[in-house]
Length: 299
Image (tube, rainbow, N blue to C red; front, side, top):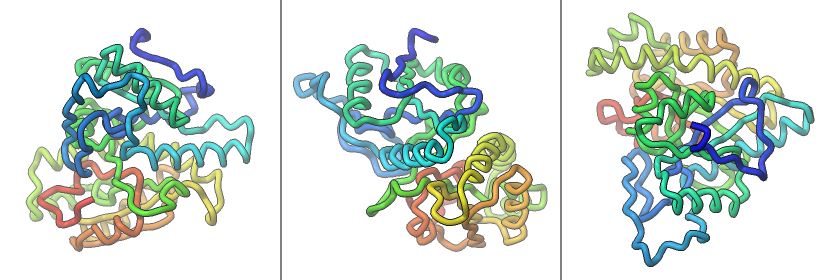
């Protein structure tokens, strides 16, 4: 496993026992070839013709860039408050392209853009889960729903990166949690069955709720480092499908895990696209409910 990990010499390595380790898919970090697919569509990159590839030419910026910039700002603010702070974001890049040429170009691209990415993990599809475990990953991020689903099935918290629009999206790191997942209960399962959710989907949502706890807890601890105003870290809760009492239950769950969200929205079935456009979250932590049953909101 160690042979597949490359350290970034320009970034101070963080203590994995205290840091919030987030693994980002290379497909989300860079446009690896061809046109980047719209958000929520599977990213299928076509290889560039060999004649056009230059190993020292950086890849174009991907959807994850605003997230990385926002994370860097949070870390900077935390260290300004306490130079010995250990509770920091530790972003690593995960790639399933293990060819030497690709590895070199990915690493050089990160160095070119001066991104605060501490490690590069190059692994095969078969080693995907083992790589997440080995690196103490608390959250896996991608623009590919299949990649997110694969991580979730392996028992790792995973979420989608939201396509940012407009300026100023790097000023505040915005994490959106699903009230439908966090407010899930036997009563809510009955409501979702009426909405057309299948039993496997309901079981998956129930499992996802427990998987979110560790990440929510550390984000809550980090959020308390800042005051209510001017924080570089903002957390939101959006419940789309379930009724308002489920939203209240989700808020209670988050408080029990140590997180007071900055904003909460209970939509009761209304389209969520206007709220997403307003919030502009970097992380869409909703376990796939963004497109369940052809939800009218598209990211």
